[in-house]
Image 1 (cartoon, rainbow, N blue to C red):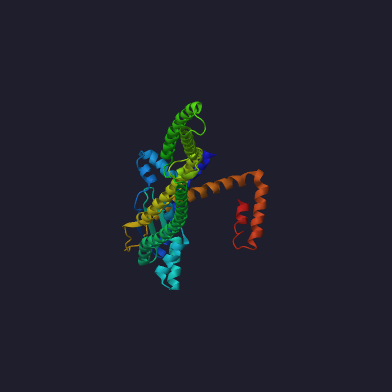
Image 2: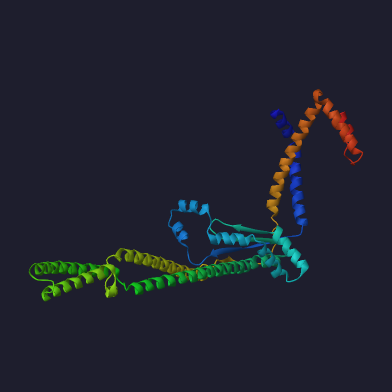
Length: 395
């Protein structure tokens, strides 16, 4: 079967060649008859100011790993540029800028944007904008207007995002400042109320004084005990020694319970642990509020700096020029049409030969009779549809 089809092609090679030539000539003629189109383009390079930490980390990786990491997800700047390039706001801005109220020109610009504009983003980050239009000046105008409008939209979007971020940080900063002020006031009130600016030092001094008083009480108790053995209760020395013992006990009591004026100088031993825990809690809350406040101040400062340094901008590397000749690629058109005609010629010859062989097979007679009848019926409504029915039946 294959060899038989090959033999048919070899015998009818002139038909294949003529079909290819006819297709190529037809394509060239149609191309020459169509209105000429002009193509131009511009090359843009993104520049985003300061480099982010993630970009610095990627730049330090080997080339292969950096490429794999870069394919996982684009940077926020690249994503923003991609969204702007595909937005309807950009197209509407282009039409408004170039048409300036002229309805016919607006329709022409919109048609070029839909059918004749191509935006290509290269792996190296550059952007190529290619415009094809019947008017060479219009094509160049569209290509050169793209960067200006894209940068304007990027600036507006970035500015709005920076303003919202700074407003949010300022709100959080005001709240953190209120919490910090309250923590400072609570700590100050506690220290003033307890007269305890340095609890550890005061507690140490309290223990030292209490130890000295306790030793003095022991010694005074021995003196009183010796005097009671030899003196009566009305003895002046005994009474003086007893008064001294009571005075020292009262001092120790005030020192341990906090009664009297010792609270102003010493931390009561019974209240020391509680005061220390309370002071530690207040200091911890104050330190936490202070860290939060400082972090928000640093974040607000960084946001204000980033709003100026990290503004995405597209720089024009190669501007678009007005083309002086149309983009009729006749040799390429001829070659492609010739190849298409060659394939069509082969397909037509093979299809005709297969149909002839199927019709000559008696087993397929019923199908072809039905087919011829269908074509005859169709010819009554559609001209020329059943024209060759009789000839086909004769064959």
